[in-house]
Length: 502
Image 1 (spheres, rainbow, N blue to C red):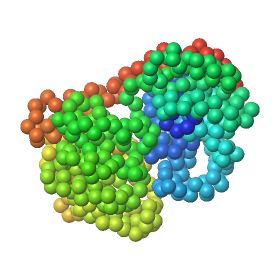
Image 2: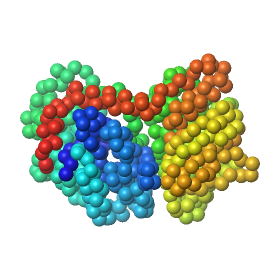
Image 3: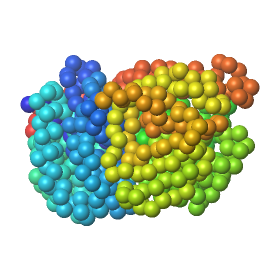
Image 4: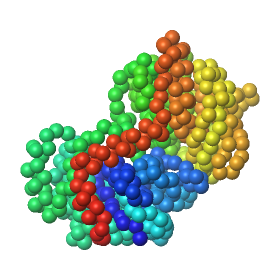
């Protein structure tokens, strides 16, 4: 049996995923075979495993930190919100349906055998399992049927570390209030507290830490600073989506849809000097970017109508006429066409007019396409013609099938790494491009080629677009995270906690 430890938080976005990733890297550095685990994840950023199964990207990031292949057992339940009251439910990588919150709550206890089957797979294979909760364990209206926080800790008999976010204020109330609202058996599972995202002089904080320890009877085993590391974010709560609107030499604007998904497709551009990557949700933010990216979305039709109603669609079309290059990925690609139809009611039902920038039509189908791919860019028209022949690797996750009008040139030629099928996909017009391939920019040659082509178009020096190896860069970030946590957490205490059960 693996040793296990669980990271829970006082609320969403306190840093659970990052702390868990850091512990995965530390345990790996110390010679252990370690795996992440989150029984139920709610996020729109997802990934396709080698077997063609879908899981949350947070556990993929943690698996990378641990130096192991991501498998769906690390995230057996994934909920992808389609609207404010419903989600697509994915169990062990397969879609089982779209449900309202109330309907899902009725069946989620029945999923415990699936969760435990996944957990036992990790338990039998790895030395340590780093578990992650979701939201807060003190949601008193949800505790009865909990399968992700204390309910999961009990199923796995795991000790718990509770994380609070001081950057958002009220960290002592967060931690004390959470502990107080738990039942006695649940409180006994907590073995330590962590105050996360601290900035400033720790000696000023120390009296509060001492009082918190007296009030809760629990040790504060870490006051971790606001670590400036570049890691993937779990979902649309990501702080990078609210980042700077500063414009650099090469300006890239990403349309921030209300249901944006897989925005990690564009992280590679953040590491290129002289490039600004801005997330835009209003007309006045758009400006005159060199490249406009339309990302994936869990509700393509509704987010297209959102763009249409708030004026962003007209602003994007105007920017394109003025010279901005447009690139859509997945749902963003679907929007670029002439029409989107949903006869099976996968999203909204009915049909909607597209943006009209590509001569394509998309029809939603009930079966989701899920696969890993590799291949090359064909011969795109316009600014990105220089990318012809550049190798790509990535994955597809989509419910729609897009057909190209007569004379439309496909963007890529790919091989399905699961079925072995070779095919062409995507579409290209003059300075308008679309593809279903998530990760199409991750190859540094693609990202660098995009930036160089945009720079050349503006008459900027040819040396623009120097990109570090993205995979190697992520490895350095995991090491920086591990170094920061080792310095500011009591790792001896954490190793002692690993020897305990709940």
